[in-house]
Amino acid sequence: MTVAHARTRVVKAARWGADEYLRSGPHRHRERSLTGWDASQPDFAATLVERLDRRRRVALALAAMQPRERRLVLLRTQEGLTFQQIAAREGVSLGRVHQIVQRGLARARRAAACSQEEH
Image 1: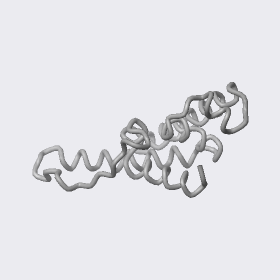
Image 2: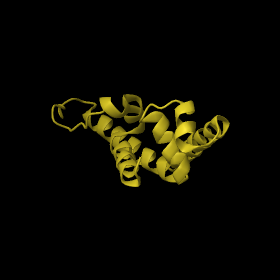
Image 3: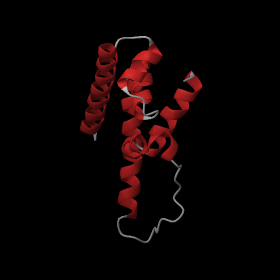
Image 4: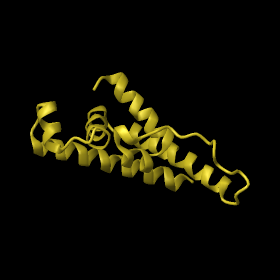
């Protein structure tokens, strides 16, 4: 994965929210727009604010990761690669891949918790 490709994925993840984007995978994600949403619904504003806040938290969480952590987490979550495939692709041991991914996710959770406490 090139740096530009990884950066695009990070931007998309920040734009559309981690929960939705990370679950959807690389081929199932389709960019969504506000068309089709009924602004007259009572929860429209709350939903919109929640989505914008989620995007901000995702961007902060991804920015908190080290570049290598971010790359491996994206390979795992976006490309759908197994830990074994990532280890072979990166030329590192399976244990090291587990360690890097877990460290990156923990760093992202701490960053998200800090941003949650600020609000």
